[in-house]
Length: 169
Image (cartoon, rainbow, N blue to C red):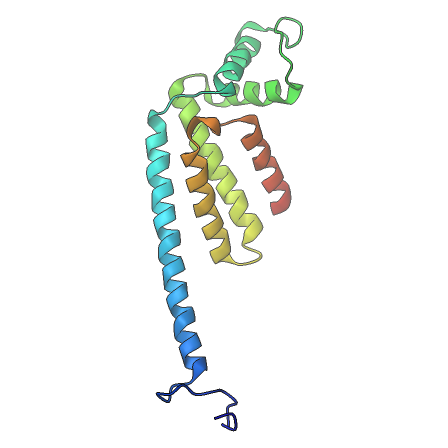
């Protein structure tokens, strides 16, 4: 009935397509909301499980180098041969001074850096929409903790924190 007063087409059973579209949007809203809640719960479970995992990849090496720099006054590029940029030494030396060098301190710093990055993601995306910000944190959390040791406190990930902080400001 194209000549209807509200300019909406009616389905065969008499309900308008606009009402059907609204119901579909409500269904999509609930499905995405449940998916985001599930991803947030998955992130929390993975974060708790991460306290049992060990550091790997470059992090153990840089933690050791930062321990040598902080505790034994070694000088990078003079006493320690390494081809990485100085920012890596500074970052891990600062991290070692802040949290220490134990396995538990590493795991606390790992989860703490995730919480910091999540807060910065929320601060930068809440300008667009708060639901988008929460969904982004949920997706980021699952990806971050699923990548296991290959991402934990790696230089690339730590750089993301600074980039997101710049966006959030």
